[in-house]
Length: 423
Image: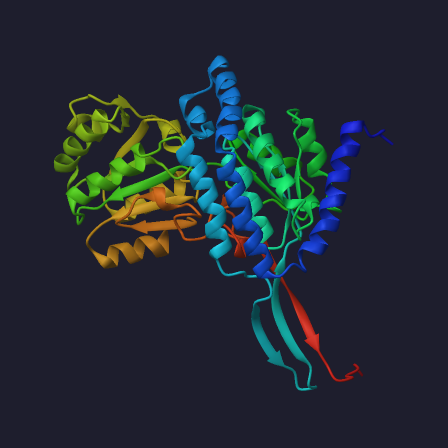
């Protein structure tokens, strides 16, 4: 038997405490949870300057390590983002509480009344990189849905995560919510993740958020169920029946607005019937925004070999940068085949004025989120009106797309009788 280290013991105690706290948290009324979430939102605002100060330590270290621009962007906590963090907690408080919802009621011939009731999952382990706002977002969602949370952030956001967590944890000590319902593993050692992934007797679900390497490591090593997406290779197909001005706006937004996130467009597909007209226009807008185009042979012919040549690897690459793969396809059917072959089942869009095309796209593309005449950048819990998200799932069980309050619940059957016995 392998002797457990002090770090092992510490993480095990965290998980045990979270499990006990989850049982108490399940009894906290909605009104109380909402009041406390609003209080936490104010705590974040009250300590805005301190959070920015600690975040600067992480930014300084990131720049010293020459981290990619996309990662540094996700790491930044400026006044605007801190205000958004606070608003996210307030918005979560304003949402309907799913816990206790009776999903279905039916009566058996023997008189038993069976209710299917929504209930918290229990203890949620969240392993994430870069984005320190995840700390408050996920704590808010977990508490509202009656779940305890164990957070493990990345080393690149060490000071930011620790600061936000401590502010929230200290604030909870003065409330009716058990403060041990939120835990933070502040070790920068990946071995700590390994320990956490083996605690299936205490932790009920793992949600990894970060690069594909981290997520695959979690999925391959966890004894606990995992909800995940590996990467976001998102597509936009511009049909020959599209409003081309609209298509330009959508494609530029999907690529440029924030390129370092999982719902940014990575491949643009264009119908051959309008490629000659559309590509020069959109190319001008994209290159003006600093986007590097990697095109198929037909794209390069139309654009007089200005773009770099795309190879097979480009169709499966999540750039998280101002780089875009472009392919001219025969028609909608060819676009659907390409997306289902090379895509990551995350978010994909069609731009068309033809409703039948849009419906075929919706029925045929196997992705968590599908868009008609809109940017893929809307795949986000906040944008969906969910308050925030714990993560985006491309799995098919038990939740898909932005995972928020309902995704953090399961159900149980409550059976009411009058002395019935089985014969």
